[in-house]
Length: 314
Ligand code: SF4
Ligand code: MG
Image (cartoon, rainbow, N blue to C red):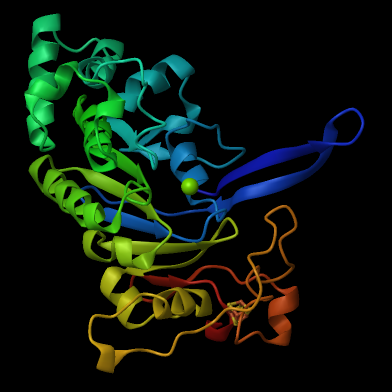
């Protein structure tokens, strides 16, 4: 609810604060139990910051986060640490997130030790079980991260996240660093695990085609703001926001006869430290009107469950 995260920009002679980046700007949304909410946007749009702020891996500047009725932004650090058992994260770069000096067994067992779950024997059995769950062999337990391919490393990251039986998993671009051929294997695995363990995902990606199959609903972010949110079908069949339409036009279609016209956006994403006035997208929007340059559009529900922030619909 009204989640905001600003970072100071320091500079000058004494490295004083010279500005501020509002990486996440007043986001409000819900994630329902058992669903997959995709969050999509270009790099720098604030999607990873949103994911980390929800888990308080970085502290939000303002706003509240509720998990199953508890305001977790009001919890002490100690209580938050306990609560993290229910909320895990899978990172984009499976190599950077696995300690190269630890065996796979140690890496997957670590959350069980942190949360004091089971005896050592039970923890080791759980590691074996988890390796098999993610499609690896229990023989792999004594090896080190560098002995695995990118896809296998992401399977290890997934096993570690699932070790403590979380309810919510934030998936921060889990396939972006992988070869295209491996991406679909990992996506299929994650979809299967979601069903098997009744998980809820927030699935962050920079590409709509990645979230297309796995998501129930999709939110689109631009410069720290949410510009559209809808069910997957609504979003893919009837995108409303000009930015969503441009992103969708870049998604390849299997049937060449159905090829759509690609919408090219002019210019680059503006700097998040100095976002345009009014609608933050107006400098690149093919439909920009005068009002867009001065008045910021707010997110409105235009059809049931379909929200958009754009003056074309006001
Ligand atoms: Fe484009 Fe205006 Fe809509 Fe922004 S508010 S997306 S500039 S039409
Ligand atoms: Mg990111």
